[in-house]
Length: 106
Image (tube, rainbow, N blue to C red; front, side, top):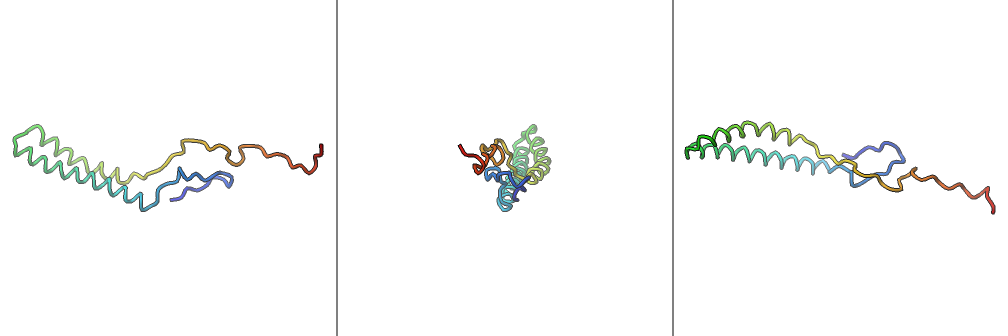
């Protein structure tokens, strides 16, 4: 999404422009897929840990697998934004203009 200008005199800064909608959705999908893959690994790990007799590990992995969907959804819904961290030098209106030379003769 393009950022709306506050005034006509404000310069457009390409470095603070948001990513395209397609890039944003692709990044969200990757984060969600990564979280859900980790959740699946927790379930498989819990089964393996239970079969191996690690009674302290499998409840932890099950708890992680229960909490990860919430975290995955929250991370998938976070929109990427860029913040303005600097001021441009020489922006319109920051320097006074010189008077016209029509009325002045030296």
